[in-house]
Length: 253
Image (cartoon, rainbow, N blue to C red):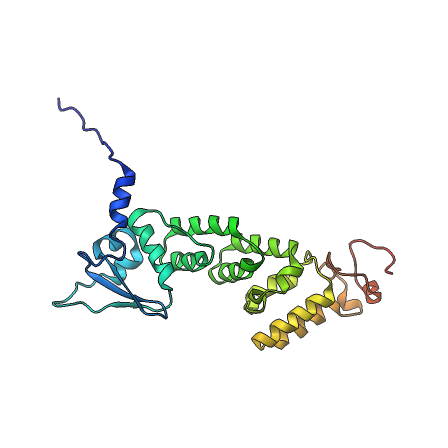
């Protein structure tokens, strides 16, 4: 009776180092990419990309013709992020940087690399700060990353004043801004939030959303009554708040 075989494993680090040496290496390369607005040329190996990623399998399915094949143009992904994706495909690891992790995350989502996406999300969660949070929120809303969106909104609720002063806040899209305007946990006075929303509208040229939100948040009369009409946590008491059904009833100074 034949003895069953035994699977043995060599040194993983040596294998990973050898493959890492092939990242963006023209040696034996059979596919070229032109990536990012800087149009950087990047070399890769067709069979490795195709077996690791369905996106590249479809993209590179046609056989290269005779002579030098034309480069594959990927203009929307920055070169640094694309190289991080290649490193992950070649070695199953990647060195993430705070300034580019969201671009790597975007590429991972677009290319269907779930493991890399989860690694990026874990990194973003640890690196989240006032300067990064709005950009992270925008990525979360764009790609439907609900857990990241909830985490970003919670962070902004706890660091409202600092976040409203960032350039990232002014560059949010309307769908990314709406969850913030609907939150009643922002630690900021209502008037200051209105001013921040106006600044956002001037940058994004979408003044109507500010007026609609202002009407919803500050309107008077019976139409304002309801569970959605209550004073935000950071808002100072004002005379017209007596028209709202506040969860904490009492005299308004």
